[in-house]
Image (cartoon, rainbow, N blue to C red; front, side, top):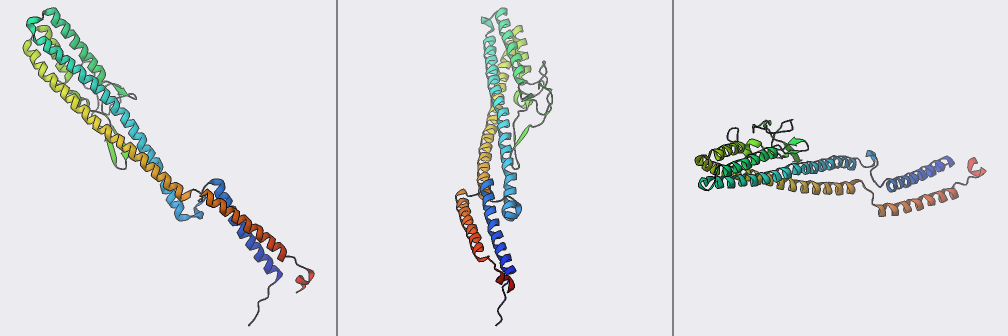
Length: 296
């Protein structure tokens, strides 16, 4: 059996390598405590780094979904408020028509007063139909203009849906099509109010009676449209909650993947310090070469 010869140079190299390895471990632990992360570069944990990158991409997406839901909720809240006031206005116009139908109790001045109020209601409805949210008309579709209806009641919007993406592959419409809510050109609530105004001034009981029926249908259509908008608003609330929950889950998972366990890292640091100090002390004791060591 041949015994290997251990030289001073070999002892020096091995001792230096051991101390460098201990210093490296100490340095990595110090870095983890300083940065608060166990992954500071891809080489620290390639698979963990890849997972962290995917999680980091997903978290902003969920935040954007929540912001989209918030924006869409603003649109639909404005729609709900506007349609509610418009339904009340149409109800009031129908009540005026019912009063006007009793022509025997009203003179020409009374019918004129009713007609004037109906005309004012029509103007108010047109103003409501041009309600905007962040500078865009909520009943104007994809129009780039500031109004969905002209003063004469003509629809000037651009048909189309204003959508908001609230989840992967999920889009919710946040506007309302004007003609769907208020009727098509020539048969819209504005036209019906015009006809009622004319009938009241002329004392046309047949025209007034027709207006009573059609205005009730207009009010029902506005109510149905409002209910549909409310359903979509509820979907946005659910989508926002889902996005917030997903963001929290992803953030927690990201923390598990790349954040440092401070208690564990602190204990590791102390152990590495003790090990490194022991290595220095042991090396200092062993590496005391004499002239005889060099002559061997």
